[in-house]
Every structure is written in C-alpha cells, then in structure tokens.
Length: 61
Image (cartoon, rainbow, N blue to C red; front, side, top):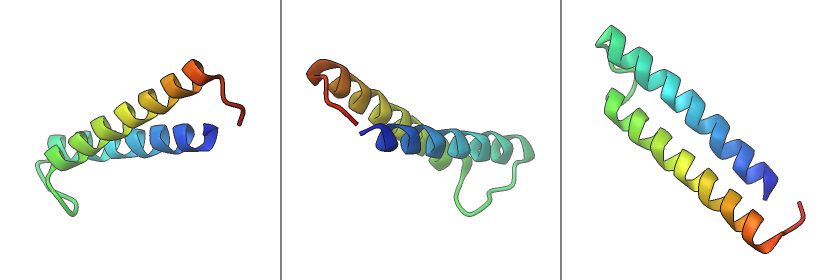
C-alpha cells in the first residue's frame, strides 16, 4: 500500500511539473497542459484515498 501511495505522489509531481512548464512555454509536449494538470489532480486524489484507507483500517505495508 505504501508503494502505491508513493508512486501516485511521484507521478503527480512529475505530471504537475510537465503541466506547469507546458503552460508557461505555450508548447504542448505530447498532450495539452490541462491534461497533465488533470492527471496530477487524479493522482493526488488517489494517493489521499489510499492513505485514508490505510489510516482507517490500519493495514500493514
């Protein structure tokens, strides 16, 4: 469970950086900046959900 949370956060940070850089340069990398930012939001929400599940049910890693 801990590796899923960490990987979601890492993916979200990378996607957030790509989205911000794409927004500032006005050049899309592979997709538009909005797609990167929405994917980052999804990853952060998934990480928060798994973290709350881990806290609520006290699961071990």
